[in-house]
Length: 308
Ligand SMILES: Cc1cc2nc3c(=O)[nH]c(=O)nc-3n(C[C@H](O)[C@H](O)[C@H](O)COP(=O)(O)OP(=O)(O)OC[C@H]3O[C@@H](n4cnc5c(N)ncnc54)[C@H](O)[C@@H]3O)c2cc1C
Image (cartoon, rainbow, N blue to C red):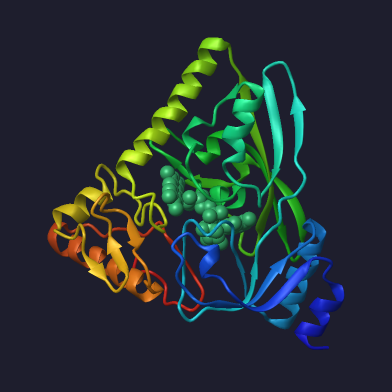
């Protein structure tokens, strides 16, 4: 039986063919996926991954696309994007553990904090994307990383579903090294109760963070947040600016004049325009300062890997 027939016969969720994906990424560039798959639940995903494996069809995972550079040539095989699974909460005297679907927005965490008078995830306010993406990226700021609020992660692969305790996974700066072929489907998030003073501090920290973002980040244009991770003891943005590249453009893409570690799509940019600027910054910073900037931005689709 062909791949199409088999997946259509067994999948309870949805699959669509030849789907343009640019609008599902925050940079708004790139081509189409051969197929976009939305499983009904974790078991449906397992079945779909097993069918892909058996037919040798490549699989990629997409969350909110807020850290993704999608190739102009599109994506071979199946791109999986999760729906928002049902949420659960377990309370104790110190706080609550929420089981959130990986397709839920990161913004759900600050929302739950405000709603229930909880603290612990202040640094996540203003970070776009999904819980699954935040896990894979160990998203965060100087104030904290996603791992800090995680207590367990459920991963689904063609072999089955399994919960991992937080410390069973390898978390580093802007990356969780997930087992190959595993998609994050649910994450347990731990938040704490606080007294009135603690809650006030938490609210103030989130307000201050959102204000800082508005002042320093080009939030009015499509972008992906920081393009590079910061090298030890320095800032990628400072190095790119010092290399004289702030404001440099290629096609519709530009190294933001507001924040040199951001590339914005001013309209009509292609993924190749963005990649050209990424590689220009890498090349110039390495030539001038001997530091190879490592992209935080993840490639999706038909690309050569980044120089790292
Ligand atoms: C305006 C703006 C501000 C930002 N500010 C910050 C910031 O302060 N700090 C920060 O860390 N990031 C920031 N980012 C980047 C981005 O928000 C984070 O990296 C976020 O975690 C990406 O989540 P996503 O769901 O959009 O991931 P995607 O871009 O969809 O995917 C990113 C990676 O995660 C993988 N992935 C996604 N979902 C899953 C899953 N369920 N299972 C396994 N792998 C998966 C993808 O395959 C890909 O490799 C910003 C981005 C924007 C646009």
